[in-house]
Length: 140
Image (cartoon, rainbow, N blue to C red):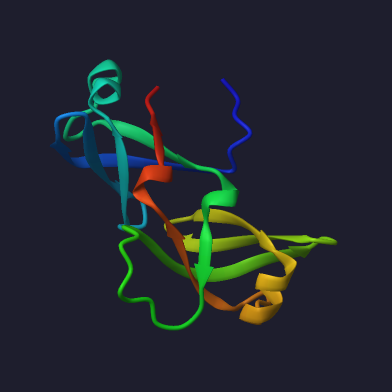
């Protein structure tokens, strides 16, 4: 299956914390970073997700927020420091590609105004932020 979702990060599950309806699943990316997804318990069961499972964490580019400088005091679980490798400015929107280590990249779609206010250029250091509820999981 091919997907239009730009952000497809292979990960190995290190923990599953079950709840009544939802679970949090933590996975380790190839660069050592952790990714957290909040998914339904039925998805965990149907996909057979458990410790050691190989999954792909998926996040739409429009769900990736960017920050420059120190990031603190946020409930957002997924925080990926990285470097802007490509910045494409459109009339209203900007596409920002960020190298996050381990040969992995994230793409963020933000407004052109936000890119300008953040002073983004290729080589800028940023932190990509993704809420765990906006991360989906896929298995092979």
